Amino acid sequence: MASLGNLTPKYGSKHKRKRLGTGQGSGHGQTSTRGQKGQGSTSGGTKRSGFQGGQTTLMRRIPKSGFNNSKFRKEYQWVNISSLEKYFPAGADINPEELLKRRLIKCACRVKILGDGELKKAFNVTAHAFSKGAAERIAKAGGKTALIEDKTAETDKK
Image (cartoon, rainbow, N blue to C red; front, side, top):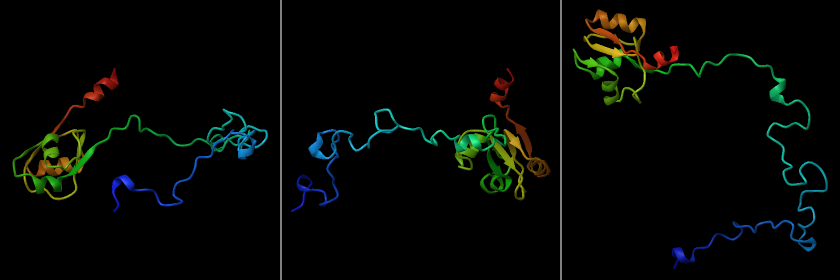
């Protein structure tokens, strides 16, 4: 009967470790399977990734191009006004905390309201940013928009 105490691996699935530098008779003595001379024959003789034997590496041969502003980019969670229409009653006060409770956004970070969809209910919406179309549609339905001041913008100016 098989139990945890007498389980063994399948024959051939486990291999014996190659013991290097154990004498001439082992077949792995003297140079320890590293060949005769050269850069990799001694300890510490490894080459960094991308090394091309003294030739200028590919990364240095390809010209630099483009610009990446990801360090300073502002990430927004976005919500369409069609979702507000669907998940909130008329006259509701909508802010990032309410959107997070209803799982319309994934985290309590910056929120931008986008103007995709129709809006028939009036809402009081507070967010970090609004698209032009979203702000117009909310105002047209009789609602109000309010911007949240971004605290990180104040520290960037200093």
